[in-house]
Image 1 (tube, rainbow, N blue to C red):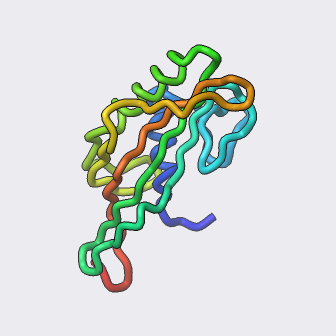
Image 2: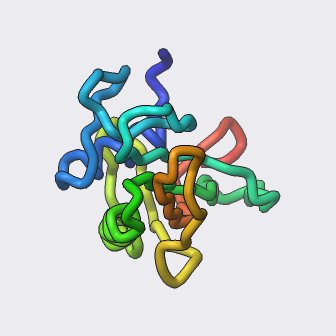
Image 3: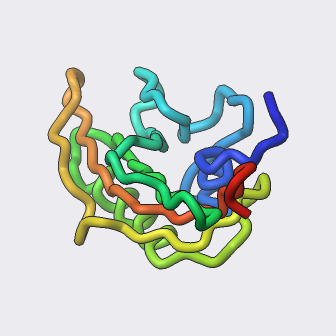
Length: 145
């Protein structure tokens, strides 16, 4: 593992500090927040994923605008995942400027949808909801400072 700040790890740790998820860097059997993959268990889980929206980063300004999806799985009751997704959306929408745990400098986080969106149910009838964010993060490179 390198020493470069990791956006997803920082977000997971930020949400854990606020009691919205349980997360341990490197993983723990009691965690319910995961980075980039949704495991079959536990039933109630949160996954944070960076995805490519095809936006081109500025060649001169030292920041990037990654998109982050928060995917929340709950139970057979859709209210469980919807409520948790809304709570996470509330914690992240409008956040910044702040240094996340681990050192990522978040300039701004903006939810790019009005509410938690239903993804339907998985193969075991657990409801899932998502919220998508545009993040602005400080990201200097050799030619952007």
